[in-house]
Image 1 (spheres, rainbow, N blue to C red):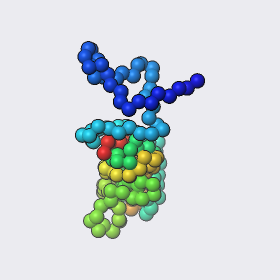
Image 2 (cartoon, rainbow, N blue to C red):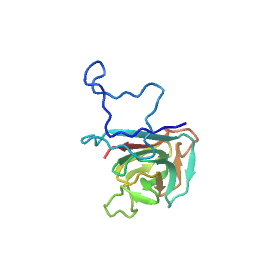
Image 3 (cartoon, rainbow, N blue to C red):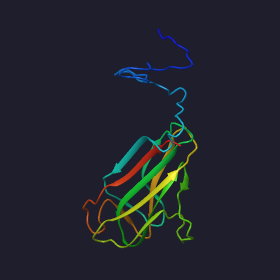
Image 4 (cartoon, rainbow, N blue to C red):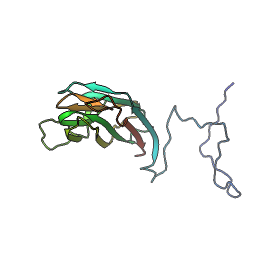
Length: 186
């Protein structure tokens, strides 16, 4: 049978080996999922959680459209949290430009504002990659203003067919493709 204790303040003993500490014993969990935890002032910028996705299989995408290479969800612990998104795509193409971008819940975030003919450039690599793999990378700190699950997508677009995680002229594996989401206290 569950019980409930209501208190206003909990404090540890003022002296001794564990002075001013409230200790949660090993094997026990402090669960604040039904409410929230208010962090002390000055704790902004601390890393709260990290999610990482890796794509190692080879894939080809048609040119002229944005394609989602990797995606992941993260649930911020507070609506004031920031999310740092980092994406790296290993790809090859028979010439032209390849671009990557980040999308949050269907909205492109962190895009370039240079008036490029291909709007939404967050990272770019170009040249003829028939016999090598290039890396296109992007990074953006987002403020989703939500404590609900947020979906981030790492997307790529190219002037020609894009070969992710392989060379264009062969089926050799290239480097992996990565998407990392980090929640930072706001």
